[in-house]
Length: 282
Image 1 (cartoon, rainbow, N blue to C red):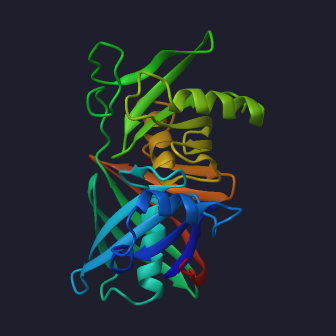
Image 2 (cartoon, rainbow, N blue to C red; image 1 turned 60 degrees about the vertical axis):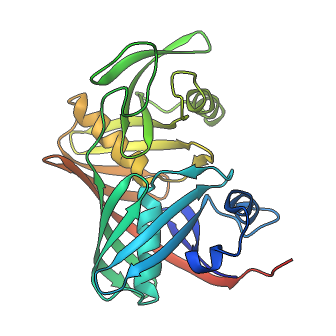
């Protein structure tokens, strides 16, 4: 089975074709095995794509986390999938329409230099109500801004949104020690108020146009960056009136830009093709 490895600011994915995936009886277990960094190829997730219409640029998109769970969507994953298609010239247009379980997401190639790509992704309309996220504390909330979430007898004011997948942002003046925010992120991910679990972002606002973010991803753990997480952190910053509607998001491996234009959110960032390989069958 052929695959390609691509990363976006250190958030790495393995990409395979749906045609090859049809021979796999259990994609969840396969994702878990191939993403293992010791006994597999190693990645934060597995992307399964299928070109429906080469001329129109329509592509089916599925994403599996490293623990085998299937997610709704991923901003970095979409950019990596787009990079693969552009790199292998599988699409005739500069635009790609990805069909995800969270709805259609449009991708546009901004720039390419060898195996490096700059790509703009439409991330849809942020969902803010508790029923859409979902968030369940027994009450309905139109928006969840600075909600007092109890973690290990401490209260953390959190802002919660969905970009097709759920995100919980914790704002800090300085980042906690790594072991501490890992523990908090793990507790937030599996908190009973989040019936589908949740991604956690730790956000430090630098100025009206720039934030810095650490990411704890549902089903993965710490990741060096997250596209949808960057968008969620930016949306949360805007909702709290801490930033303007165009935000530079600094991650551990570099920056991307998030814009909330009218209703929809867009992100522009890099993706790099690392290598192509072939997985030996057992």
